Length: 261
Image 1 (cartoon, rainbow, N blue to C red):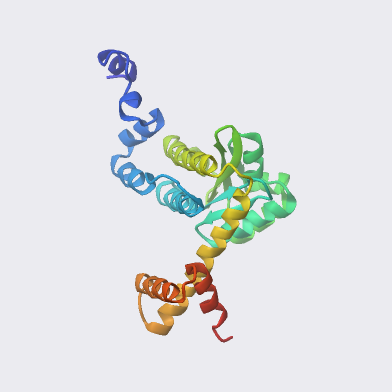
Image 2: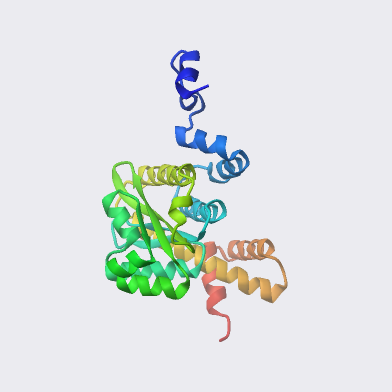
């Protein structure tokens, strides 16, 4: 039964209308039922603040690597009221390539963000249009980059960046899955902007990124010192921060900065 026939059967109401899901999500569900079930479960929590937005960005980056052929690394670049910066990444190679674009003021992710159109560049095109980035991509094993623009309502806000090990990766990308990832990110960005109308979003996200980074480093210190796993280390940090009446990130910062060289 086609989407039109189904809509006719239900008095003009389509599957998307009844389920609240977009046509892209429904198509991806039909093509990849188990993968999409896991994806929807992972990405369904709504964004309420900067921490939940960063969690969503990281989850989408991880899911992109898991679901998309030849995508080895992924990340999200955001730009609100300041310079662009990397909000999420699955490997340090993402940071290296992103920083090369930021320093040069151009590249696939910045071009996608500014133009509102997806940008794909294989290694030859990277060398031709952005020589320094092309050299860096070759050095770290990246053979193609695909960047999808992300908007918060009408505002260009970010880009989902996929770093591939094959120059023909874009030809094998399932058209629906990246669309679904972008859709969830755009919903999260819209939620965040609606909850933070003041022009402090850039600063808030940078602070949240620092907090997450320093907490992760402190977890590593506690894991080594106390011979516990990651969850127990976080519990220990949280308990001690409460005893000291400090924010978790501030106590974590103390832990990291008291580690001997």
